[in-house]
Length: 137
Image (cartoon, rainbow, N blue to C red; front, top):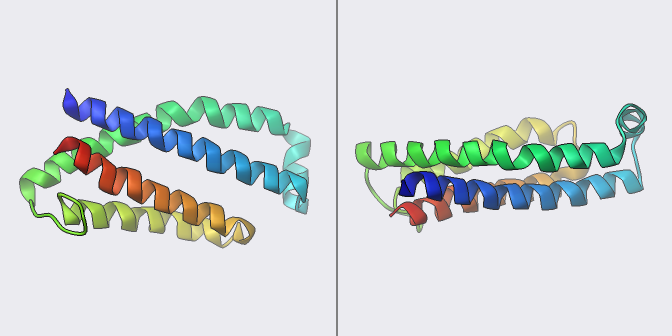
């Protein structure tokens, strides 16, 4: 039960950061739109995209949080060992590396928004890589 609660809490926290960073990035993109963003705004109104992001963020990040909590418990039993301020250094490095691996392909087409990608990776590594294991120990 603690695993589910810790995973859900960390997922909800990550969803809040995702909405914050995503909304700020969307408003910055709408202030000075590129041709691709202008074409996207013709098809989808910006308000609708923000509402969809908010509605989808909570369930998606909560599922990710619970999944990572279960993964942490499996790794804690298989390969225990703390380090880097985390109860399980293998898990923390894996989560951080996965975040970077997901962000790198996005950084090429969205070069303009690399600060938002870095902020999202850092937040994900902090919430899922350090906070979640601390909540579970």
